[in-house]
Image (cartoon, rainbow, N blue to C red):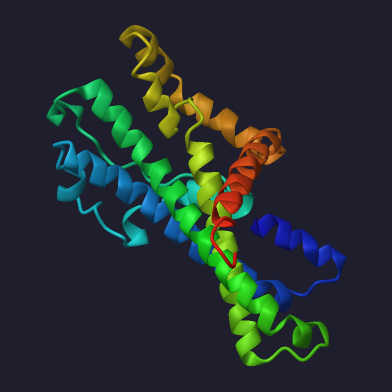
Length: 239
């Protein structure tokens, strides 16, 4: 993400060239992380746990949800996390099931937002190509063309970041959301034994992110899903 843009400076791009895209990525990251955590809190609230609501976490204010390290990882690599929403399983009627539902609510919200963003990206992309691409290719891009271009780019980044956030968080290792799904299948003693190593696993995950080892498989899966979303949207006449 932003790291790729900084690499482009080596190829002759100026900071002024990449600054608009950096701002778009920051905005999309704030939206993606906020919707993710708010969805966790909303699911828990609907299942009987009011903890998140009482602590003000049922909010679309990004300041309520951002984790510094997770946000930086999201900005640099496209994979990251926010400050976990507090959940008290004692309020759930069926703790195993309801914990899993609460956990998966965040990635599902991101997948839905990713699909909607893809839809708007396709719409604005077609408008841009049909209306302004010729003028831009000739070097005469107007103010309206630039606004439309940045709007198209915004929805592209919003689609990509939400998709990557969803798939990354579904990896079944702590403290990611996918680990909560293990609670449905693992005996308690194995699950809680695994959770003891949460910090060490997270450090290993940061190393894998930094070295890029985990990037290729996640990007491959995200590419498949993105192609599937595009195919579904392509069924709409005119798109």
